[in-house]
Length: 85
Image (cartoon, rainbow, N blue to C red):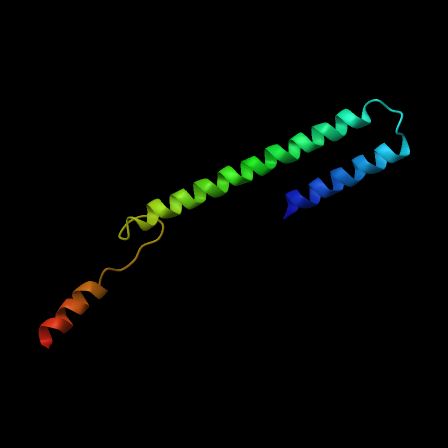
């Protein structure tokens, strides 16, 4: 995933920056901003996953319409078989 690679790169650069120049007062706020950005991204991904699952459940509730369609032909076929016996 490209986002994880970018986050790893940003974090490794922040760590390197903090180790090279620990006396610079902007290192800690920069690291805190990165942590907040990572948390916001995690929440965004979780909300997206929840929305996708919710949409999938709603779509499966309507088997003849929506993104996933399921043929209902097996029910009439079963009824026909029962009447033959």
